[in-house]
Each structure stands twice: as structure tokens, then as C-alpha cells.
Image (cartoon, rainbow, N blue to C red; front, side):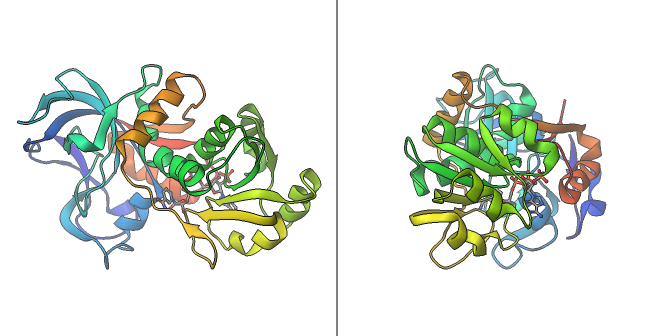
Length: 306
Ligand SMILES: NC(=O)c1ccc[n+]([C@@H]2O[C@H](COP(=O)([O-])OP(=O)(O)OC[C@H]3O[C@@H](n4cnc5c(N)ncnc54)[C@H](OP(=O)(O)O)[C@@H]3O)[C@@H](O)[C@H]2O)c1
């Protein structure tokens, strides 16, 4: 099968299109014909070797953790899926080897759920990692409730745009930062936009002088240092991109119940995955450059496969 591989750590330039053997189908696993694979900043970080102290890479590595595709065959023991099912998944294993930038992948069935009926393949592939991160931050960690106000740093990004919509479903008011070009999109998902940078505190305080109830950092870059100027007394804060005293750092976990809840929100029309751009599989390096260099439209960059 065709796949994208890298044989050594590095940037987008180490990616190659290669023919590799089809994956084997283990017990309790599902063989998927990949239709789309969303990119994540983690792909770039791991490829650069930044995870080498906690995760082995078995070269050549096929990158990618997000998938949407069609079940071709199921392994012994699988009862919940059958050939022809349309599925999505967060395929995160503890070694880097068999990723989703490929025509086929064999995935433990516990990492999959059905694809939302009203989502395109690209949107479906953009939901698992970013959606789980957003959901676990907003619902499980911040425990946002009706009538509260949340500030989301990076609300135009893959995670932030989903976190903003999930916050709205919780009944919260959402203030979100993003570049000027993202502000029309942010308004369309009921976010009150502010620019990141020097005037962020002033602009947030102009919207809500008493400060916000909760702060989600989807950016890093030291924005957590602004928390005391942005939160009201007793505010809660978490980050997906940084750590600081008194702030919970959230790491996305595969959880079928959470991912199914996200599928339901998409099917109910309460959550839409924004797709910033799509690229064919062979243009994976170009797609990674677009993610790394920023300036993309809001949402996810996705590889379309087959
Ligand atoms: N802990 C976890 O489990 C987990 C999971 C997923 C992601 N992450 C991390 O979370 C971060 C966001 O991921 P993502 O997939 O949402 O990335 P993304 O789609 O690239 O979004 C990045 C966001 O940051 C904003 N931004 C860019 N430059 C900025 C600046 N100088 N100041 C403030 N904001 C700026 C962007 O705004 P514009 O595009 O409008 O400029 C955009 O909203 C990454 O660091 C990623 O590694 C962690």
C-alpha cells in the first residue's frame, strides 16, 4: 500500500511517499481503508524527535493519529463493527510506527467509533484528537456550566474551535482569541473574538470587566502568565499546551464514550469541524508546512486518501 513514512527524525522534509506492506489484522482489531487523516501539531513534534525520551520510534515511521475510513475486515473477537462501516478514531499507540498517513491501517476496535453521518471524511478525521482534547478540557476539567464565561486562547485553532462550540453547548458565553482573519468565523460559532497580543487583557476586560470564570489555553507561548489579569475571583484554568502553577495540563485520551458524545453533538448540528485545507496523501510535507508555518484558515488541515 501507499503511505507516507520518515526514516529519521526531522521536519516536513524527511517525509517520503513509499510502498509498504499492508498491515496485518490482529485479534480485536479492525482493518480500515483510510479516507482521510487529519494533521495535528503532535505529528510535527514527534517527527522532530521531541517525544524521544518517552516514546520509541520504530523506523520507518508512518505518522498520524487521526483517521476516518471504511472498515474492510474485522479481526477475530470484534463484534461491534463490520465490513463497510464508516468509522473515525484516535489511533494513538505507545510507539511510533503504524500511523494514519496511509491507505490502510489496522486499529484496535477500542480506538474507533462510527463516523458522524453528516460529516465529510475530512471533518470526520478532524474530530477525534482535537475533539477529545477540547471535550476533556471543557467538560471534564473546567466543568463549565450554564451562564459562565470562558476565555479560550487560540479559539480559531483545531482544538480551540471545537472547545468554543462545546462551551456553547454547555450554555457558556465564549470569548476567544484568534488572528484578525479568523474573527468572522469566530462570530459564526457564537464566539466574541479578541486579538491575541499586547491588547488581549484590555480587550477581554472591555467585554467582561469583572473577569472570566474559566480560561482554556490552546496556544502556550506564555499566555498563562496573564491569568491573574483575566480571571475573576476563584477562576479555573487549564492548558493543553503549557504548564503553570495552579493550572491543570490536559492530555487527550482515547475514550469511546467521549468520542461518541462528540459524534452526537455533530449529528445534532451543535458541533461542526472546520476544515482549513485538504491535501492529497502525497502532499503530506506541504500539508505539514502549512500547519507549522501558521496563517491557515480556522480548523484542521487534512490529508485526503483514496
Ligand atoms: N495536550 C493535548 O492533548 C493536546 C492535543 C492537541 C493539541 N495540543 C497542543 O495545543 C496547541 C494547539 O493545537 P491545535 O491543533 O489547535 O493547533 P492549531 O490548529 O495550529 O491552532 C493554533 C492556534 O494558536 C493561535 N495562535 C497562533 N499564533 C499565536 C500567537 N502568537 N499568540 C496567540 N495565539 C496564536 C492560532 O490562531 P490563528 O490561526 O488565528 O493565527 C490558532 O488559534 C498545540 O500546541 C498542540 O501541540 C495538545
